[in-house]
Amino acid sequence: MSHILVFDSGIGGTSVLSHLQTRVQHANFSYVMDNAYLPYGLQPQEVIKSRIKALIHWQEQCLGNVDLIIIACNTASTYALEEARKHTGLPIIGVVPAVKPAALSSRSRHIALLATPATSNNSYTHKLIADFTSGCKVETLHSTELVRIAERFYWHNALDQLALYKEIEQLHIPDSVDRLVLGCTHFPLIGEHIKTCLPPHMELVDSGEAIANRAVSLLASHETSIKKVPAKEVRFYATAPILDSKKEIALIDL
Image (cartoon, rainbow, N blue to C red; front, side):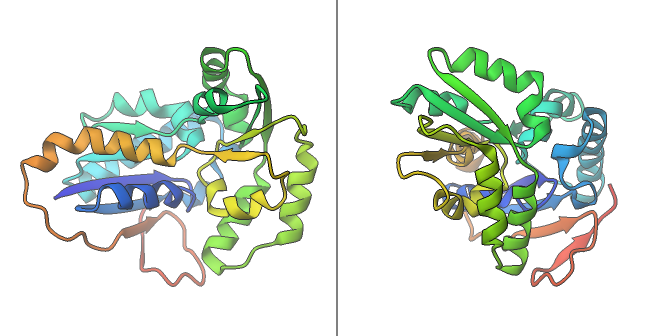
């Protein structure tokens, strides 16, 4: 049975995890959140690189038999994916903003990327936009408030509707935009609620399904050589205590 490690600064990566669980049903999952440094969107690049290196060291020392690592965080992926690959021989999949499929499907040729400041402003994202959105006008928008709203929604099942509406309103998304790229894995957790704040013609685009497809491809040869048995529950780990959590979460030190 394959063992997949999913990593994010908070609970946002569960939006990717849900796609993985649907596509890779005979696998064990470990979910690690570096919530001591949440949100990564406000952290310097060198801090994120050091945290990713620490994750790999912890995985090797404490977790053991992992077959695939998913960095389910756009900021960590755009800042530190290549650095991470220098420190392990395991395959690593990163999450990057889905600007390419958004540009290909846009009818108005006007799209917007909504991400954290670290993702929307970094050179990797700028190159993605330059390489894959030819002929499209691209708005780059950022929010960390949506991360807070999504975290609260996940842990407490409570949505701050007024805060959400105000945050979307202050982004001033042009009405001609018809594709809004969710460039932070936290945002799909409240995607349906974000939709209620947008015009009907504006569709949301994220990377979750593409990441799951890539994982299936990488694990294909491994899966054919092992016995398929029912998957176990996801094991959750965190670097800081989470109050009022109904999940069993092991506290770790990276």
